[in-house]
Length: 164
Image (cartoon, rainbow, N blue to C red; front, side):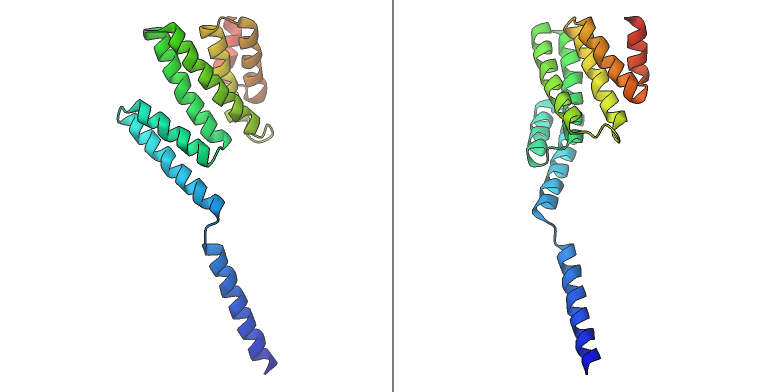
């Protein structure tokens, strides 16, 4: 008799455990929603709807502010800022690059320096580019490039250091 109760208990326990494992947590739901928004952001940008894509990315970050999302958003802003700076309006380009800088610094603060050297190197390289080419601060640019090289021997940063 005892063994039947034990088996019954184990079945109830394990099925309840499996059921609990299959229900997404609030955090998992937010991450999933953020992932969907990030995908829609990329699609909007690919379709030529930059403003909509940026808005979707901001909404994604609000739901799940991971370092990678900050890096992605910072990279998009970096590209836009460079294009605006070179093509039309240097002042607006610098404003956009400052927004990129803020996102890249958030990414840096969230990444693990022992595991995420590649991503950190990318962040530091873009910051170096911002400071060298748009803001004219060679000293600060050199520091960012050096960090990129030290972390991951980032080739673009190494080349930039050699040119300075």
